[in-house]
Amino acid sequence: MASQKTSQKTSQKTSQKTRRRIGDLVAASAGLIVLIACGFVVRDGTVGSLELSVFQAINGLPDALTPVMNAVQLLGVLVVGPVVAAGALILRRWRLAIAALVVTAGKLLAERTVWELVQRSRPGKTIPDAVVRAGSPASGVSFVSGHVVLVTGLAWVITPYLRGRWRIVPWVVVAFVSFARVYLGAHAPLDVLGGLGLGLLVGGLTNLAVGVPGADGRFRDRSGCSG
Image (tube, rainbow, N blue to C red; front, side, top):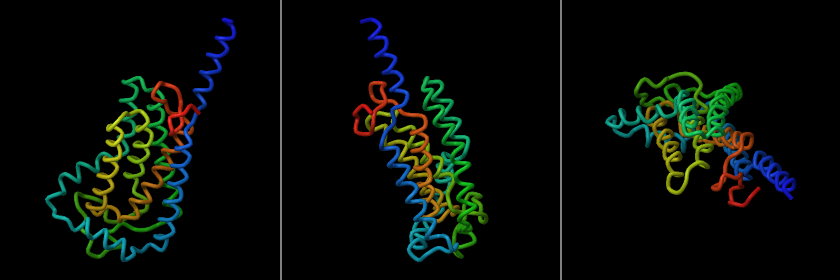
């Protein structure tokens, strides 16, 4: 009997280590579709009329917002990934620490791959009346937004560790960083939307590789049922 219980516990632990959520696969797939769709639209390097209208509506807001938006966009700089990993280590969330570092590395690799395939210049070059603020680059490759890729990937891997209304917080950060990058004139809207798609792809694949804990410490799928 004791041997049987030990075997069951060992089997359970092994199973827990290999459980993954179907939701992560869905997110990665949806992200890839969004990325490809956006890339297809911007592949000629121009900004369409609808995208231009959205850009002008955001970029044309008062300059008084610049200090706030400049501070917000810093949440998408590369160092944020290692900072999240360090915080996770302090809280003994080993799996989250690994996931944050994998997302950071994945972001660097993925965005550079996209830059080789789709090359559209910054709004400072493609939109004549674009207002470029807070030292944002006016030239260079614009699709996709690296800031948005990083915060979206991190939001996806962080969310399973949060409960209740706290789950909204990472996505509020994603929304603000996305808005800030367009307002500051660093990216056009489809650069940001493509970055969101790529971030979901990176975050979803990271969770599939690393795994996420359920509410009771076991690995569960998105519906809450044991995988």
